[in-house]
Amino acid sequence: MAEEFLRLEDSSSNQVQVRREKIKHILVGSPELVRRTIYQLHTTGYAEVGSWSKPVIAGSLGELGDVVSVLIRQQG
Image (cartoon, rainbow, N blue to C red):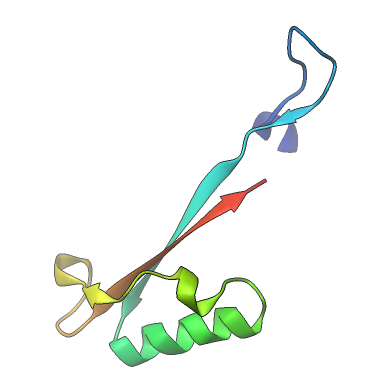
């Protein structure tokens, strides 16, 4: 399965090349729950608090009063 994500050979070399992709995390919920989740992910070492977007009104993504915050990370 992992082989699907790797380009094993380049025509000009025998080096393994890994395509760096971005993963997008989206939190939608009450402002307090989104804030708490961001801090929990920070304490686990997964993402810095400042790496998340400023929470904005979620609109149709959530319920009344919900906000959305996004984190984009490079993987690979």
